[in-house]
Amino acid sequence: FILLLLLLSLLLFYRKRLLERLVEMKLQGKLEGEYTGQVMKSAEDLKKIPRDLKSAVQKEILRVAADVKSVRNDVMEMIEGNKDPEKMAERLESMNMEESEDADDQAVDDLMNMNITLSAQELKVAESCLAIIDSCLNMHKASVRMLSLETVGDHDNSKNLEELAKACVDFSAIAEDLGALTCLDQSECIACASNISGKMEAARKSLVEISKTKTNAEEYLLVASSAVDTCNAQLSALKGLLQ
Image (cartoon, rainbow, N blue to C red; front, side):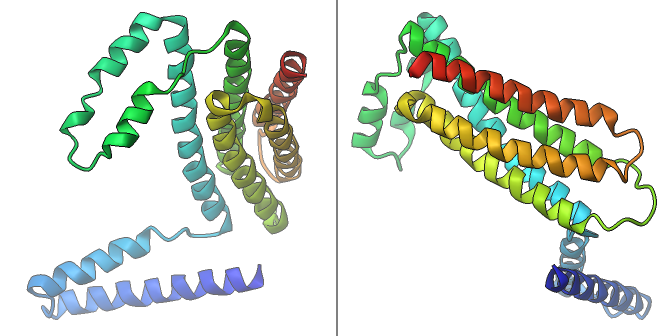
């Protein structure tokens, strides 16, 4: 962690130096042509560096949340397609893959011939998995919003922030696996969901500690707790369906 702070401090120092040099050169009229563009681009890139550990954690949570949301949308489409086969057929027909010069013919054939029709029980499993993935997104939302709240006092939340980031990254990766297993191998969904539950509980505990240094954090603690409860309830439903 100390190394991370040193690196962040160094990056901020160089950022300040570069921006100061940029202003000086502009005042002296020394920035011309492509050099102006290169220096300005570098300055813009430096602005994207997180200002502190809290900002870095928020950025990482938003990154993994985007991946989970993409998987969530895929699972939702599969469920909707199974509930409305005609709609699914229309979507498949609209996939004009032949126009893609890079597409592998065999891969396209395999995809088009893949059996993505779910039985009634498999559909229930998929819906439970979707609910778990949604609970992951709610935990992301609660985490990012709580970190945005005003901090009270000068408490060191470094350890809790690092643990929150690790838990969110971990359960997000497993949620992506769960989405794939929903249509590939539902027998593994229980183990996957159980791992998500454990990681989400770890994230919730980190938020409990962080909330002690934030104003009006109760709302987001409730969202986080509800996300864990939903995940556990759907895990129980999966066990009833698959065991």
